[in-house]
Length: 137
Image (cartoon, rainbow, N blue to C red; front, side, top):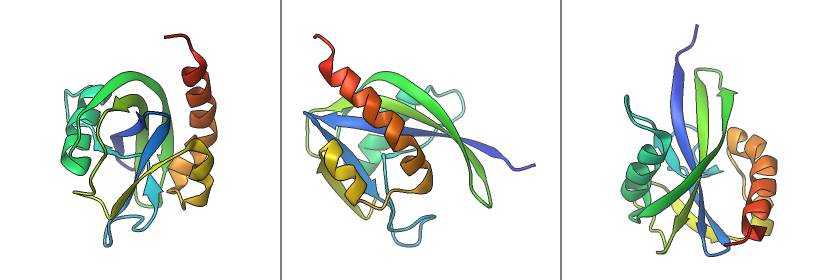
């Protein structure tokens, strides 16, 4: 049986745009775009892991809003549980631990080659973002 890895993925809003990151050369799924995040450490909540990972990868502070959903995904060599967490950012990100970073509208997401799990999650994320953006303050 394959090990199951717990991972957080940030659905990070910068205004009405989303922050996505491109995986580095040499990494698993290099060149694909993803909702940034990383492994959840033992004893860490997904929201805590997101704050830590985004500070390391993109050099910005994020404010988690809530966990949206968890998506199990199987790769040939491993299984992951991706915890998608909605968060807000105030600053523009920098590509510190990734190949590149982009701040895009939801309409622009399909133009990017998303990693398989992120592609599977996008339709659901898009519906949730639209509902969140229409909610009263």
